[in-house]
Image (cartoon, rainbow, N blue to C red; front, side):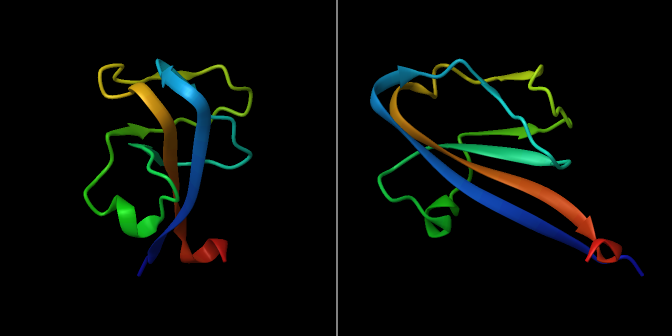
Length: 95
């Protein structure tokens, strides 16, 4: 029997002014499965993400940062910050 566990990493990024986010590049040293992107509130936590992300991506492994994920500009226009949750599925053999 395979047991799949989802490991998650939460990051908030705050900007000094309003930004118009057009794309995001992910450079990682491990293979990720999904990225969920949120318009960030001040001191956002895992409890604040229950309503779902503003946009979600299936992530392709890219250690060089050559892939850019296009963001829905209408959802991320004039934001002061963003939060991301990166997820990775792990089999029990990886522990």
